[in-house]
Length: 196
Image (cartoon, rainbow, N blue to C red):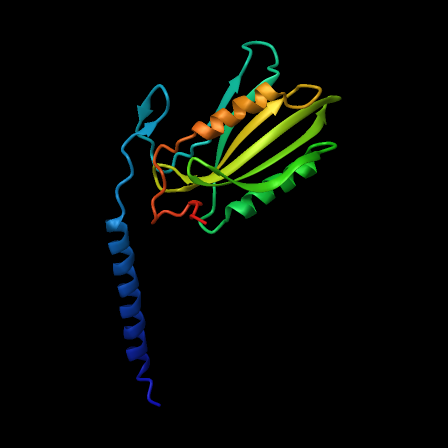
């Protein structure tokens, strides 16, 4: 079987690489441009693509003293191939290693938030002798540059008897009213829920 000269193989390899590069550029050209502005509640600005967003939104009941209940929204860049399940288990595994006397109240379970697949877990641990109760909801989304984000919505209660009914209802109201600003479409997989 004749495979051609080394020059033929080099030429074929170059043509194949050029074809891949053309396809990549065509794919890039089909992507819609990211929104010009980064949006917050109060303002917007143009965010350079290399500038990382490590935003944490913190909501508390009190201004100056420790709050008996807080709600925190965090975001972390996620790898293109990392699954929601893997990221959630990894985060909870790290928490198990660092939080003293961690006790699970609800195991990691699938839920839906804002129309997409999410994971929920509840646990408690002791911090300086006092019980701290948390519910974490995690999901994947994308930022305005199309980068995958691992989002965490965490409710924390310092109530001795556990998270109160009022606190749970408040957290559930947030979850039930959550709407993603730019919902993922079918070409940007982030955990879209498929009908059963």
